[in-house]
Image (cartoon, rainbow, N blue to C red; front, side):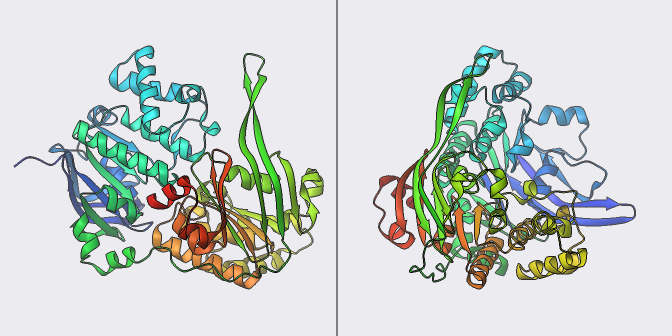
Length: 529
């Protein structure tokens, strides 16, 4: 009988603070064989990522301790290994794709420098040979014009492109075990399918073991051989992928499978005059080259976009990473320069300067994709939610501000008693509710939602969608909903615009486009979803 590549045996993981020990994983057991893909699924806070980081011993000890069990790689204990042994394993025989690429990539170094560092350290390659390998790998993970992007810094890439660079970085070392922690969360369905196909190919080529951590059961269905379901730090079910979807054994697994976005958008009064009118919106960025950084051309991020949005109506912007979705959101908020007309409540925003925009700002709010990045970790919840009030309603007393914060927290389903805690003390879903409360407290008419559910597991995603619909009905809010998740768009939006490389591919009534898409690209997106 062959030894599994990875064995986790009765593992318990705890965080120790003084005499207190908080156990986050309890007696977990699983194996991953060479050439096998095991999916590790469960809600936020179930212990998936802590388990993954422990396999490579990336958690600081103390405060982390392992009161029980062991982790074996190729039959040898990882928990008992010294630092020299661990350095030989990490990167060479084990690699990891992290969930948040902006945290994992060095903002001060170019993409080429960061990729070359991996090949130089782990495979001893010289720069010319390494460059060819880098370009091949970047093209395989779907980076367009890879040669031109090597000199870019992480901030010059879209979220999806940064995630693809992270995946390329892990694959360059050709590891025996690849741990992928939510590697496709920030990716649209086309790139997601491309990455999953790539991982399957590499698994076969290298006979690589793959531990795939995700909350997306559609991905599990496509890639996994076996599945372990975790809840509150314990494995509640081990099953083959086919059997799990056919006949799940545990009630919690059935709950996860049933938590797909569903329902249709709330009814909107389409006879009302538009709240937001956009005509021929265009955004371009200068391309600078040479020592003097002269402008040699322009990158057209958005070529021509027009739409009307009424009170209480939702517009979905969908498309691949880099298609211009987030750029559109920033242009509508007048946070980046654009050409074309933007009328909000019959006010021409395109003619206003920064100072003139200030009275309009409370009426247009935004909820960003990643609450980890958009919430200040040094402020508590009261300070975060009340920040807009201090800027736009400075006459309020501290007590009045706190009362409004309590009201906003109750509206989004948060316990006001937790208002003096900090973001790190909340789960991903709770942090996103804090971000929604921060937008809501100024009583806006329009909220731009930039991938607000992409980093959340399905059950929390469903709760946030229900919340957004309830708030829309109560306050007649208009939403511009940016997403690559077409199921979520269908559940929330009245109209949809499909973007590709800055151009409008298809536009119209959401139900109509889902039922009978006219363009091949739209049909491709729907089939992949």
